[in-house]
Image (cartoon, rainbow, N blue to C red; front, side):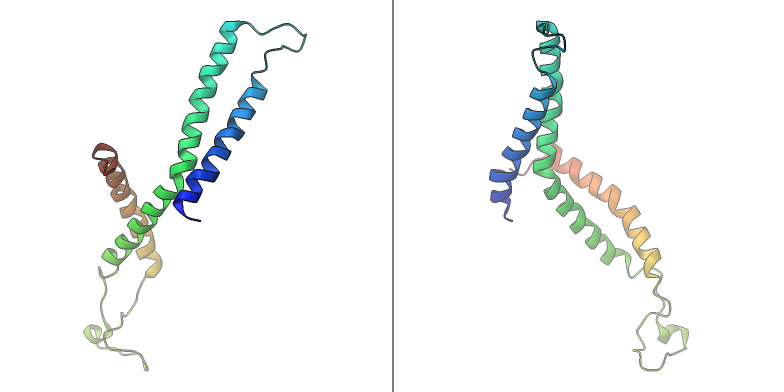
Length: 136
């Protein structure tokens, strides 16, 4: 699904659904048939606005920010992979059928954990930079 399709179909649908839910919650009539006071309706409206708008914006931009984190994680992985690697050539022990430059012990699970721990603050700085200095 293209980004234009997402913004033109999903976001209005999410906004309409949340608005309908909030409208149902803040009905004018109370259970005993009396009308809800204006002050209470205004409070409900403020709460509805405070919930619907951020939820809609989150629904609109969440896939984009996930994609940014995904790219950040992979770039960080390729930056972390070479650290702590000793090739079979350096160690002097060769496994038959492998290249001499292949790592002795790749420790890929450890690399994934380190990548995740490093990519989270990198992503945070990237988000902060994009928030402070928007491109568009």
